[in-house]
Length: 181
Ligand SMILES: [Zn+2]
Ligand SMILES: [Zn+2]
Image (cartoon, rainbow, N blue to C red; front, side, top):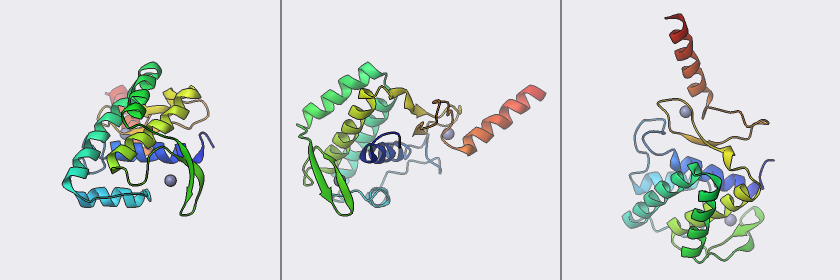
């Protein structure tokens, strides 16, 4: 395992959230425009705690999506500043919790706190881990020119360039065509 389980889970969620953007989604459309789409995403990640299911909540999560995508691509020092900002503005208070079938892990907000705030703080706490262990360069954006999907590079020598094999193959074909043209 690269990071602790809860950090990996949180990073996975942030990537999934960021990848609902039209420049990164499979459909090429914004996949976070309805409260139903938000519910589907949260269910897929077994996201616990308060959910309002309102347009207001959706708007806040969409804003969090923008902020977290920016944070994902920041260099280490800037990311550290952003993380501190996020933790301070949410008055994060880390504590160990155990709920449902998840063993001891960190929460830094109350389960009743608004969803977007919990998403931001959970991501910030995961980034604390990433920055502290000097692994910020593991948080990547796909190298394909027409794809802005993000992912965590857990390869041995940090050499992964594409979000998935489809992007890798597509770019290989393109490079081959360019060479033989
Ligand atoms: Zn939890
Ligand atoms: Zn890609």
